[in-house]
Length: 179
Length: 179
Image 1: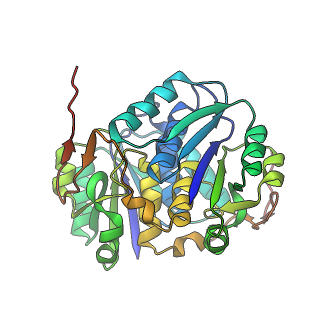
Image 2 (image 1 turned 120 degrees about the vertical axis):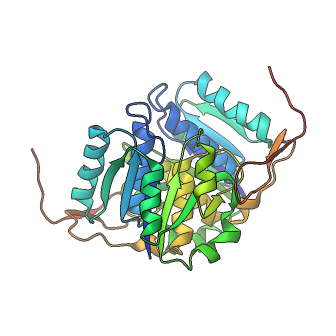
């Protein structure tokens, strides 16, 4: 199964930290690609690729000027489009159905998402009907989409890997680079 | 089962948006109380209680000057203390064991958590061994702790409730207050 995450309406500077969390969650929870709607944000890119280089994987980050154009392209390529919103249908009732699809585009927004997104999506899905965080909604949705298997995902070509510990921190490093 | 969330090391202004997401996730995913380590942050409080008033529930937000003092108090009251960290034991392997406890204090930190937290916790738990977001880790951990039942939680005395829709937004309002 493949998942691509589309972050709607990123505002450079103001949203940098939250969008950065979104991108890292997408990567950690098994998405292959993250597309951010907004002007190119060099700081966001740097943060993401610094992590990706060190912790491995082949995930890509790119930018688009139009969520709709991008979503249309992915629809043509056979992607099923899910928009995460607190106003949608409950994730716990819909996941079984959605999981039957092979390719997924997951749109996450902020507080102000235009009505067109709701109309365009194949599914509007809520992770609780309460206001909270698109970061949390994305994580729980991907966790259910991938049925928890993403939690043990191995990232190829990692320079560093965690060795889980009951207390403290342990990592293995393949090549140690210090400035 | 009861869960209280302790947010370690909140820095007023700089962390406001991320901590605000943490607090709203804690509330939405079934925690009864959120304690933020740091000086009292009126903006954070206002955001939280604005949501809580409108969307219901009895969840509390408070501040502490010492995570350790607070954690010690909760330990005395019989709470099991879980620290969420990418260096800990995998959540998918540990949840069954942790779920046997009745009362939980869940500590979430930021990038720099002092070694004492790891030593003090009853369990150090990772939600993937990858760097991502404490907001996401908290959501997935609570989702597994409460076994998904929190997703359908009803919040008493809500002024507004979502009516899940396949397209668009629908809410019911008990008392409409407009300025």
